[in-house]
Length: 82
Image (cartoon, rainbow, N blue to C red; front, side, top):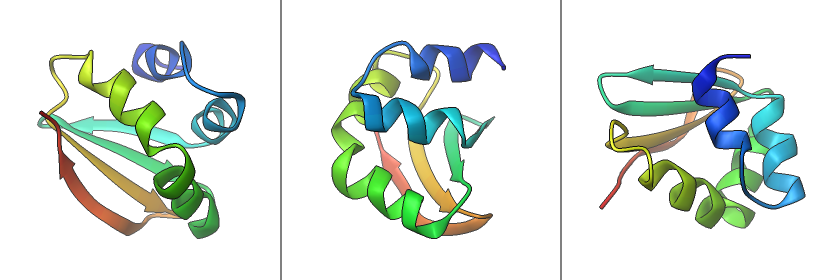
């Protein structure tokens, strides 16, 4: 598991941690990409656990935006932090 994923797993509610654990985490030019295995997981991450993800990601100064994908397909376009 990469260090960024471990940082994102460090806090948050149980459901959030489960979604992050099974997702692919990428960082491209300050854009954090969370690629959930299923589209429904991506929707759940955005609707139920967005606050957890936003709070944790905002502490990492190198993250500027968050994009949520489901099985490689962008479900939620990049959301600006700050």
